[in-house]
Image 1 (cartoon, rainbow, N blue to C red):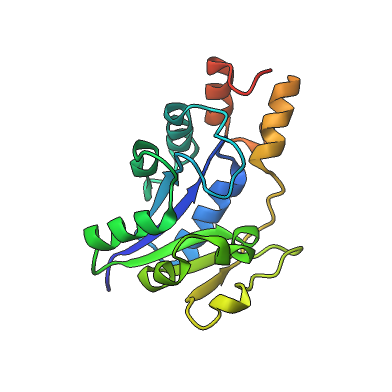
Image 2 (cartoon, rainbow, N blue to C red):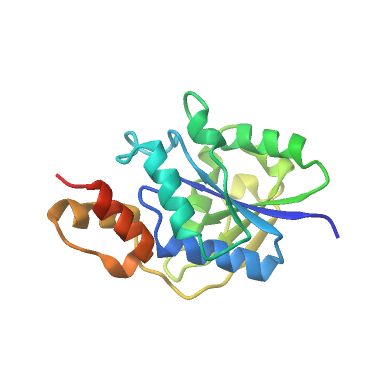
Length: 196
């Protein structure tokens, strides 16, 4: 069987339990050999730059996934100048791992707006997608991509947490421990991240 690689991108500002749950679901349900965790330098569909520095976000990703030896933090997007276009990363991974099965892992909210991604038809040809199903959002691609996308729907227990809400709680001085891996929470405290 060919090497099977998952790809989980995002700002990871901060990485939280939902990110870990998505990676675990994809790893277990798709039989992946590894999942690449790709913190974005600047995500095209996100308004504004990440709050935490790239080095802190990469460090938090390593801490969040430390219990999963199959998770590999890949810093190529934070080292790349300009926008972090997924298609550029997919092209690079296709050259580096031409025989591998490559699966981009995303949430239903991202899938719903996948048609806004740069060169998305080319992207669909370079890899498969796996979407984490959520009760309140359909796990279906935009109609314009239905003929070109290869999509698997993953199932996992609902994790109601968002990086935006966590940053806001931390800015207020709250300690949102239940959404953050403990080591990530410690890093945030030690580095005084997300404080007003």
